[in-house]
Image (cartoon, rainbow, N blue to C red; front, side, top):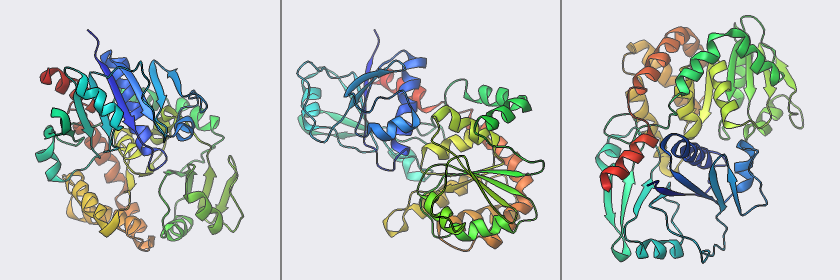
Length: 379
């Protein structure tokens, strides 16, 4: 009998939360034959990464997944049945009425899908239960980078699709041409998707003074205003290019998740943020620069250091120091000029390392598969 799954998502940072839950919902439905219902409180953000989503519909089916609007004044439909598996994404707190429905069901697996972290404590807390009111148990499920965690989101054929895409250079060029991007010979291609960052002007300056030409593909987000200010224009227009020195910035429109994956595959360096794009950059097997979501008291820097500890394994000390310096400068608002120069000296080594890291992570079971196995074992 097919299991029914409810995934609840509140959109906090525009695309990260819905990006993760939408990928997860699709994979559970397509690869594991689950009945999926995705509850989300922001259909407008959802629509930007999946144009099929109608922002005016409170209930709709999108690519085989039932999508429901989780409004501020949520009222439980009288005919709603509780799912067999309920995922509370990123501690979003389920509606009280729905929890009451769960208490009435004979058996329901309640999972809190946690934020991704490489910190050692995550493995210790992974899959641990917590007693809730009404006799329910909530299990904490941690994505991660080892077999002691829940793994990373990765569709079954993702890496094969990547390799096929990159196996024919014309495919890459056609994809970029569809975005009106014309790459010049010898030009370094960089995707840029980050939170607002005070050190952005120094990064742009470093790229504009480089010995190699850089073409930045800027995705929609809070950096657009800062980049426009740096170029001394009132705003950036989608599809237009802006140039200074050895730097050209190309402003992209909103793109789908599949297009985003392909964009990462095309680039020589991917500047990503949050969780969803962070994971996809790793599957792209290219050097990347992570802008971690800033938190109070700078606790996010511990998370950053924990990942670097894992990722740096296999690199010599000089390369580790240069990579760490780049990531710290970007995340701690330091001048990027010397850090960028250090990166360019180790760029080729990091390309090989990124491919090896992706291959090693691919040996672990993926997040969706681990969730399904956990449910079957729980039964």
